Length: 237
Length: 301
Image 1 (cartoon, each protein chain N blue to C red):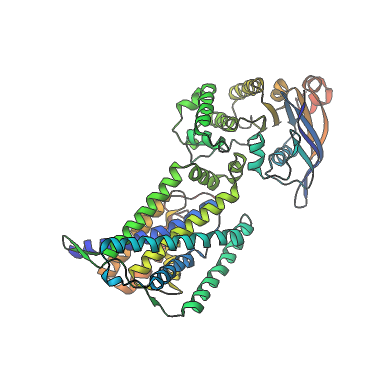
Image 2: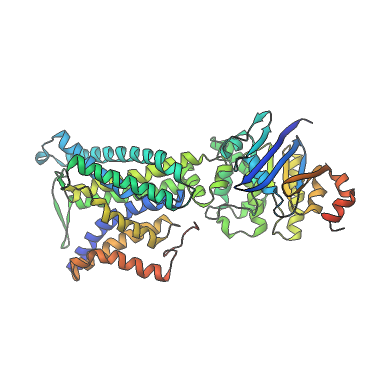
């Protein structure tokens, strides 16, 4: 498996606050990798830096051999990375249909966009039903599906997911993580920031532990699940 | 009763122009989170462009047939929109882009500077007194059941309606219009979807500016004059329209603009023309007291 994404020495600061410090991580093609950590550990900052939404103070982000840390987010998207933001963040004043179209904004060919739309409607029949409804009128779980669907519309090779399970009912979380596996099976690699370590480890191949902006450890999901420390701190014993 | 309809029609003409300028304000504010204080001066530049083109062409406007008059009007309108559109691009690049996203006050002050620059520029070039703009639409008064409407008034209304329809179509049914709505709501997410935010910023400010320019051309022709400070009061009232309507729906701004025009006309006709200007601000006070986010709601800032 080749290295799809490589982050080295990442430094993210907000004024005097150091959110991410000397962070190294990788994602290989066909993998699901998780960044586990508590609130405020720096997971979102890492994801945003990869997406180009935040300019890192230092370090490098290399995607498919190309340096991306100085690129604006729309260029990062065009290169093949899509973002499922924390808290869904769907466009509430746009319809479901329009939200999905926004996901494929970089693609100019109408025919191509329609084909992707069809595929997605098959993956998420509920979205097909709610096509003309405003995004803001959907339930939390439906919004999460829309957010994921929107990200998939750009046919990314890497999907960045920021706390996908946050605020969702357990059944929906289950469905969501099964979905994540399905996405990986379609050839899309995933980097996921998650507080819900149990679910994240269930689907991931590899996980990093992030504490106060620094990586404290990492290993295969099985190793993580078996580790005494991880069990104690992240999985509640 | 006839008086009522007459004032209603007068008010609609004026109101449609308030609406167009207010829409420009609202567009830039809701998409870029910037109050462009130079917007009313861009409106003023439109009127002066009309002045320059018409006097520059030195056409004998007396003998123009309708086709000639309308053709000339369209030429002047396009010229006005082209100049103000480019002016908008310049303002966006030099003033809006470097200052947006920071505190609301910084672009506010910066664009105020542009506004003063344009006012003084106009004064210096054309003098402080109003200049006369020859009318180019052949004068004709239509009589619709007792209500008298001049051809220039009709032109003003039609132009404003055409602009509003075009804007609504752009926002609701085009790819970039959709992107503009997305940026207005969540710029980070829109950027991550592949939208070039700088491009949307340029598009938005230049569209708002050419709208202001069109309003300036039609109003300049309607009142047959252009003056350096004509943007002040007009702009302020349009700004009030934007505040009263909230920035969530462009249809709201259109409606409030029209209503303001009508109410002003009715007050002028039935009460006193001295109170005309007080109407707008009185309305603002009342509405903001009960609904601080505007009548139809706003996005959070």
